[in-house]
Image (cartoon, rainbow, N blue to C red):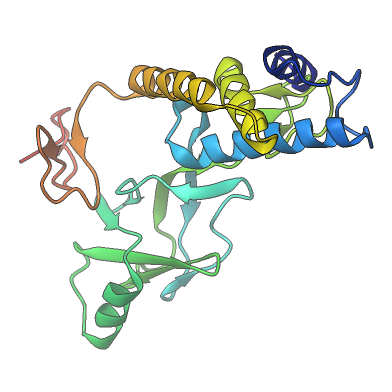
Length: 240
């Protein structure tokens, strides 16, 4: 579905105005629809680690604590605990909080099997230093949740009526309907509930089969913690 088809569906379900065009249309109704749909797309991108937006980035380290210009232009956020020094088979854990980073800087950390990193002002910094010329990789979520009609130009917002969503179009429509009704002061609870049910179903289907505890899940109910150690060539990661 394109931006225009999503907008038409939103207009149909809300019984609201249905502009003939959306992007570039200066009419208030068209501008509201475009803004609403783009807000929904951005919110969904930030809400969940969608597999379609999950990417991997590789780089070679430079000397020193700060790894400058090592993040791709479409970066939105790290997938926790996926940053590795490939050459050294070492997990680079993080990003850590500001308080933990401060304590690391105040200490003398030399254990190169226990590297941690911070992410601030677009800069990756590690303690201890990785060293120069080390192959590294991390997984991240791209901010580009839609694309042009050709599918070759990823985008962070809809910019043309023919642009296509990478995220589920029906889900975008469902949430946009609820958001539009709410913005107009109309009853929206039923539409919001339907959108939430669809969101829960899609995120459940998109989940990986393994129930692995992630950073911050200190209780890890019904989960297994990833130990951070590579599989030692046996084909299996270790858990505890």
